Image 1 (cartoon, rainbow, N blue to C red):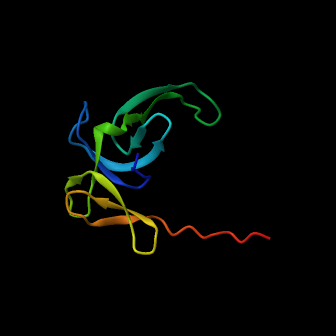
Image 2: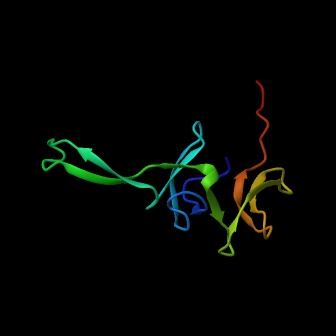
Length: 114
């Protein structure tokens, strides 16, 4: 999965189709993401010292990563590709325009053995 926290995505399938928001959390083991303002549910909260009134709390739940697409630098939805940079690192790029999104890793430094 090539999505990261802070990416702006648009929902392309499901009940919330057409909505967009920022990725709050990435669940790599389950291939799911939590997007701000998307897939909201009501959670019933019991009274406690922290929440003395109790009641229903609205919160976002995860959505499958295949149901969202990254919004690229030009404002359109795009797939994400990976390519090597000249210095030996990797970067993510938008497939529909080729614009770089951000560098993933730099060149790996070789550790000196003692």
